[in-house]
Image 1 (cartoon, rainbow, N blue to C red):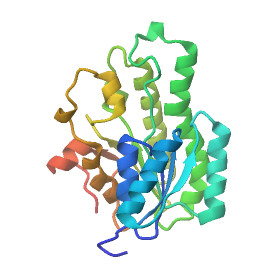
Image 2 (image 1 turned 90 degrees about the horizontal axis):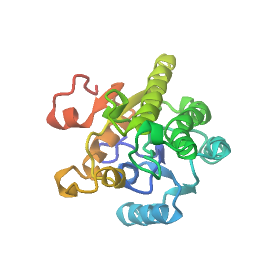
Image 3 (image 1 turned 30 degrees about the vertical axis):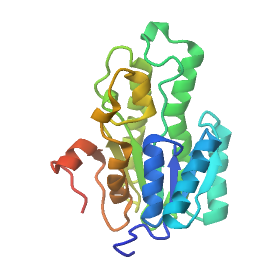
Image 4 (image 1 turned 135 degrees about the vertical axis):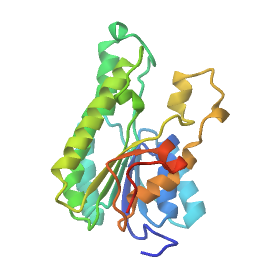
Length: 251
């Protein structure tokens, strides 16, 4: 791999790629040389991403529109990637939802709304691990980057559904990382902190978006964590990485 294109010819799946952190991650991975497989619910958002990638790189992404609540779709995704590429080198898991109701007291959660949040933020992680692990094992250096939240460890009022499902997903990822420690695969659980995303806008409608970092600022770290020639840490904080005070450096 060259310095200019550290991810040349790598196959990178980005889940939740139509906007925000997923969008910027997919674009950065493509610009670093990877072929991006982009998934999201919205076809239009994926097509916009593909146009952006083509303008920047002259190459197209592979677009897979589907909803993470579709467990069968997740199973088929793994099979389709194997048939086309024979392996998977990078998986960025950036999809999450607050639910249609947004922030709400736990006692007021609607069971249907809870089911949507739980399937998107938690159960899909299990289904994706199950579907993608065999493909990542076929890579010489499989890299998984899972986006988490500080709410997974410090939940607050009205964030119950989001905090609980993100905590479960983070715990599952860390358990899986321990299980595959003897392989060439590595998992990084990344806390982006405050980020200028549509979800944050939903949660904090009165906040000036210019006061928080744009997701593109996170993109260089995503590329760094995806590199095969570096050993990424299990837990990563964007704030600490940006300030150069992370306790676990990439080596």
